[in-house]
Length: 365
Image (cartoon, rainbow, N blue to C red; front, side, top):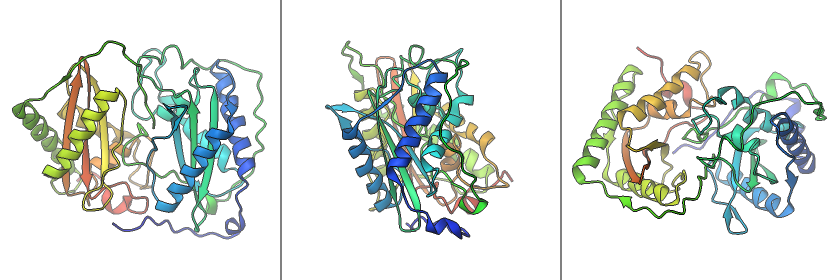
């Protein structure tokens, strides 16, 4: 796969240097500013988690792509938000503002997880008490921001008791504003899933042990045929060729689905195909795998995508991977445990490369 590369016209921005302490202070201030608006207590910085986050940000900078970690603290999985943007003196503040922009998508009258809101809900999650953030930069001055949260947020059954509506507050945002030129405009780099939905999404621990249901070959075959056909229905509308099922990708997707249902948590496999990165879309459903309907849900991200200004948009990553022209193969799987079903699809070659949206996400013909 080609290396990710973003070309920008830059002048003053090249002289920017990372002030890690200032970035962390901005991040904490901005978090607690928003948390106060949503009726929850302040986060407290924890050096041990900052070290974890810093190491991971530097790792992301070294591999040049976004993918979620499995970072733990005290043996527990950490919540996580990721951001990618050009180095500026406001990179800390800007990352939190980007995450918080998802607030407009959250339905307080029907609390729960949905695509495109996971950064925001982790940010204001009441039960999260500690924060640790890091920033790692590449030689081209593009940087990766990692924030880890302890305890983690986004437990599926706990949204009503942890994500509260906004109220008027007298808390002031003391982060100093600094004008940014067009040449240093920051841009969020996607994970291939809308992690977004993209994001750590732990779920409530269920003390009732349930057996994982076993899919019959015929059920799984029907699911895979249906979901592949629905992909190709939409891809044909967007001038992209049909995806072909691949048995190795199906194994990867099925292993990931079975792992998700066992941990009752979203999980984005780090497996590769022929040594290359693979794209990913995941889903959760109640009682039944969604099949074609899940593809329909991923496709709804088209409403957020701007074909006149192609590039990554929060909430559109599942859609763009779905219709990504350069992707040629697909593998899907699902598994259920009690009433909880998890699954997803993996794609090769993977999509959502930052400099390639214009040639891979085409308008309806």
